[in-house]
Amino acid sequence: MSHYEPRALRLMVAFEAEAPIANFGGEAYAVACQRAEEATSGMLAADWREVGETIARKDQRAVGPTPAVVSDPWPF
Image (cartoon, one colour):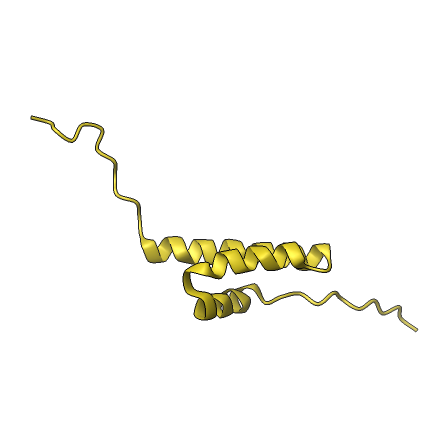
C-alpha cells in the first residue's frame, strides 16, 4: 500500500491574472495584493502575490517603455 499525500490546491497563475484584469482593469494589481493579504494559507498568499506580479508585468507591457528623460530641455 502506497502512502498518498494530497497536493495542496494551487492557483493557475496565468488564468487567475486575467480575471482581475478583465473585472477590475487598472485596479487588478491592488485586488491581487488584497487577496494575498486575506489568504488563509501561506501558499495561497504566495500564489496571489505571483498573480499580482503577473498583472504588473502585463501592465508594464501594455504601457510600453518609459520615454527617456531629457536632462536639459533647452539644448540651444
